[in-house]
Image (cartoon, rainbow, N blue to C red; front, side, top):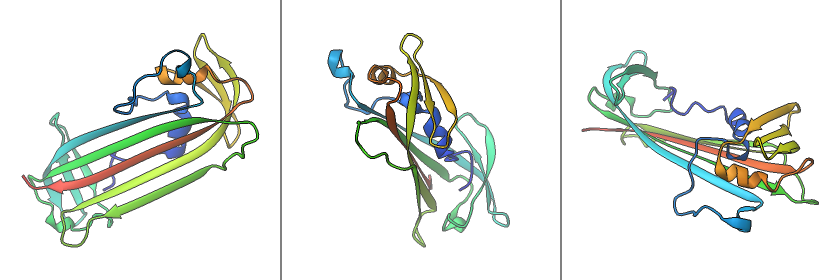
Length: 203
C-alpha cells in the first residue's frame, strides 16, 4: 500500500536523528546507565507501534481503499501491485499496520576504517490465496564528522557524508550521555532502521 504509513526518507531521518534526538523510547529491558557507566561509545533506542483502521469502501477499478482510523477520520489509500489478493479486501475489514524503528550511534575509534554510506531496502508480500498484506524495511548507515559540541546547550554541529554543516539540538537523555564522549574531529557512525508491515484482517 502506498500511504502516509511507511513513507520514509531514510537518509533525511538518519541525519536529523543524530545522537538519539528522536521520539524513540528505550529498548524494553534495557536499564538507563548511571555514573561513569553512562559514558559509553555507543547507544541504541527502538520504538514499536501498532495502528488499526477499518475499510469503509473499495474501488477495484483504481485499486483504492478508503480507510477510517480510530479517530473517525477517513482517507484513501492506493494499493500497488505489491499488495497481493487485493480482491479479498472488503468493507468492514480491519487494516493492521505494525511499525518499528531503531537508531544506533557508535563512535568510530582512531585507526578504524570508515564505512561508506549504505542504504538497503527489502520488501515482501502475501502468498497467493493468503490474507492481503505487504511489508517493507529499510536501513541506512552513514558516518558523520563532529565539528563542535556544546554540552551546556546540548547542541552538536557535524558534517554530513555529502558535505555541509548540520546542527542538532539533542533532546534525549541517552543522546546527552553519548555527547559527553564527543569532541571536535570525532567520527560517529549512525544506523537508522525502519520497518512497516501491513495486513488485512476480517472481523
